[in-house]
Image 1 (cartoon, helix red, strand yellow):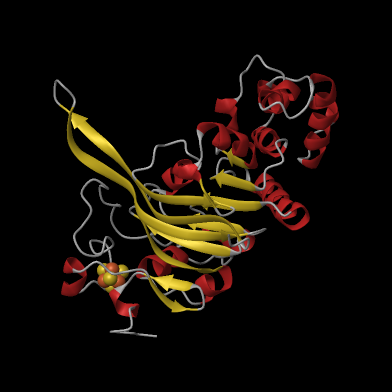
Image 2 (cartoon, protein in one colour):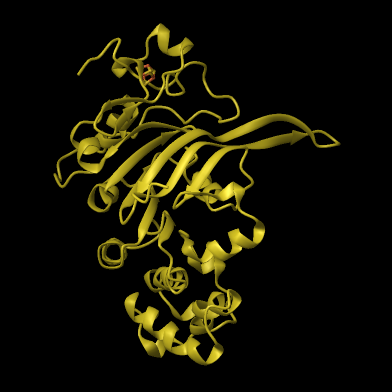
Length: 328
Ligand code: SF4
């Protein structure tokens, strides 16, 4: 076991059957995730970025076993999750938590917040009912919620407070790995900063490891240690944060970065990438980005570029940087 990594994903695929007709015959497959591999280092925040429809959320959910994956393996602290019995997986599950974009949808409007935060502790038999209140209040404080909020109902909270409740529900189980799926995109900018700082504190002070799924590269640059860029079910570039933002090599990464808003009030907004992301049930032949890439050549429409190492922990899937036609 390599203890440097909390999560090791190898060749992960998640294909959903497409059905049609009177008897629901399978007519194709939606290849939401199609051969994704990455590793997340202990005590770091790993950013997974890409446009809506790239498959980011499916990666997070498949990783936690919420979908029955089509292929590949997921190792948590060296243990292959697919080899665990249902009982072993259930025992491990509190260590791996998910924070959603919209925590309100997962809160029962008739259950008080203190009870909602603590219910998983009782479910997993991690404390007695007598010990619960103190534990809930402790984690509420860490997440910036006041103890007097304990008896309030979900509708009495703002969007930012609800996101803190969502984080508190994950944190009370003392996880060492959290998947945060677009956790701040529904919040005001000032509240976003507070939640980002909370994640950074959890990493720096408690050693929590994160998979941070986002379409916001500005936030990813501020928060993450390593970054993977996803397009149409596959990774196109992975690198350390510093390398990716200072030396992006894939045309898709370059286009995403060019569209990040600047502080210059005179700057014109830039279109993220021209055209729409293609249907994942019918990806383009060759390079999946070829239908939108301004630098596509005939080779790109025929040959799939492999994700190759081009520098220290820097991998890129593009014929222009695969060593046979290096433009760097
Ligand atoms: Fe563009 Fe070709 Fe590189 Fe794909 S392989 S990103 S189409 S240049």
